[in-house]
Image 1 (spheres, rainbow, N blue to C red):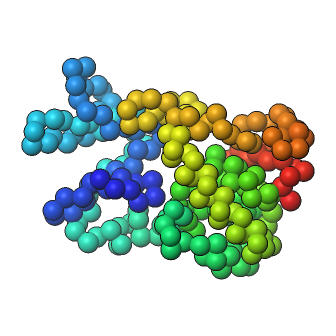
Image 2: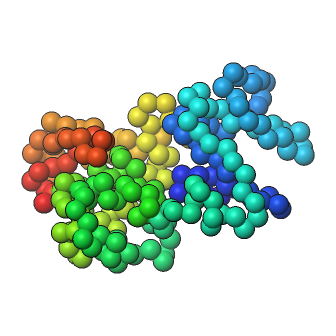
Length: 219
């Protein structure tokens, strides 16, 4: 089992099963509690174990990729690079940003630019990089892109280590809550003091998503 962006890929001899968890989907081994009405897809292993794709809100995805079909699949072919791979650098962002007029926060959340930076992490990344989320993408300097790229890797690795962020019903593979929400420096902290300068944090909807930042620390 491996991952590409937010998709899980179950590799098999003839191809790969593609799965996206959507908002609340999970894979669960069917044990003594049996199945639920939200179990919509099942995998039975040779040893008798059965795993169910549980998707209460039905936002998830199940699809099949023929062997060597990953590069052409409609859900995967336009995805940007993985920021945790060694080959990805700040230069990649700098070159893609040229001439862009969108807000920097919207830009780094675009999965065609790079994958993995969701709404929570975009606010956290830009705070650590000292860049205002409303700043025009094309005006971000090369030095600022270096700070942003470094912050993206740092935030994603820290979140993975902490098991992700549980805001409502997200759980890890073993059913536990994530812990990264306890480390938020700006997200969901409107009006609270900045951890650096003690100024009150600001909030605004940018690109349809709630965004948080410190007006004094981020320029």
